[in-house]
Length: 259
Image (cartoon, helix red, strand yellow):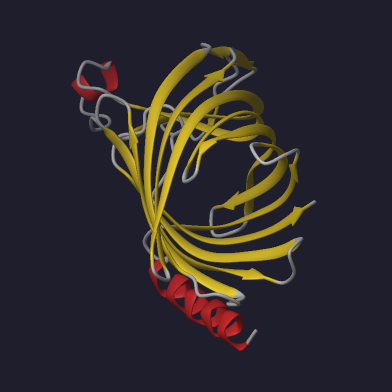
């Protein structure tokens, strides 16, 4: 408990400093897993994410996953997640826009902002391999992920130039996106050890690297059934034209129940 408390304090202090330039949010989750037999297991997970320095709810989500152990150290899994997003869609002036040509604004300045809550549907298929060398455990997960955002119409958008709502309907078209997520993780675990530290790096690829997610955390295995996870995560967004996510420092808190 002392190690976990110290880890929490250090992460909070680091976030207070670093979040001055990037965003900061808290991601909290609750997960339930059921082992059907030696090979099959199912799970349910609910998650809440915040953004804008914890002042806004970013999204709620709920998911179901099924996994199958192919052989020792290798498993395959599939899942579906429903996401309810707090969307903030901002458009920007381009070189050919009339106001840019007339010199009223510059190319790249924010143009209009739409704000609405809406759903997304996400499907994924993962293959995970694990290998241990003494107390060190390594895992590589390759995940194909498809996300679909349905079409949505807003009654009006905020105009940055006029500093007022434009009073015009605008429709955001439905859009799907495929991503390959590659995560390498290492953990240190000895027999009887209840607190297991870990570190990971994950790449999001969609013809190019969209973002990189770095994590440093620890899992506290309270009992065989109950565990808590606490981590610091940094998300470096490179070229994400779908989720419109900023670079963000994250404090992750998770609870898992197995039966």
